[in-house]
Length: 335
Ligand code: ACO
Image (cartoon, rainbow, N blue to C red):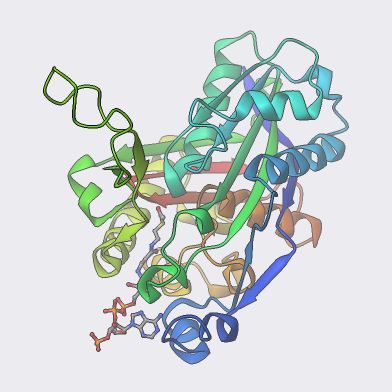
């Protein structure tokens, strides 16, 4: 059984924050940020706006491009590490889209690798049978989890959502050629936003008779990152992963029309492209405008490249995500 990409869409918040804007709140400047990262602007959610709102808009655009009715969606996979609801936000998106065909909807948490994991999962659901139209949405609002006084991290991230619709098709039309996925929990210390004990007073005071019970409520710490380690990790594992995905697809580097990596840092994009001997003009990059939007970055960049006419129907894309977990993975796909 085959599956193919039939639609894409994206959505970003209205508020644009430039490097100069950031230099007013932390000790940094446009030159430092753009030379080290390639980032110049990012979008940030404000007020009552939510990640799910962006995700719904991105998914609506993908459905419109594919000319598929929300009622015909069988599965909604939301790839996010910043859910609006700790119990999962995908069902809210299902409801927001008005999908009345009784679909399944759930979250996948794998930070900046989330979209690739979601895409591969979607293909497995379709190939397994029973699922025909699967929405894969990458959406994150890391602005809510970064420490805006930490210049080492706050300059990197932005908020966005991107979506694709993957559809069952005949095997000769198959557009998901091969993949490669990994994780390494030992590397978690290099990049995390882990649970912490809430500093607020224990709701029940200290009069409990069972030591340690009742527990205090929990919250999460800001994004913690060892930038140098993450940088080295990405430059090491991403080329290997793309080579493995190509092997699994029975293809070689020469089949790649476009390199579409998680948009974390221009130097990582350049380093991976050099290792794979892919010319700069074949590398998709939009991080100057949006920064690192975590699970949203690949579908956001895909959507922009498709709508601008850069990526054309029938072209082969090597897509790869990498990030917290640590997790990483690649998929060789046809648009
Ligand atoms: N502005 C000015 N100076 C700064 C800033 C800043 N925003 N941030 C750090 N500096 C200073 C440091 O304090 C340090 O000063 P010192 O030499 O006086 O001590 C100096 O600049 C160098 O700092 P480094 O952290 O060593 O800088 P580095 O060259 O490693 O660049 C960066 C940092 C851009 C974060 C880089 O390591 C990187 O991009 N790493 C990859 C990060 C990444 O992609 N993370 C996302 C993963 S995706 C996910 O899953 C969330």
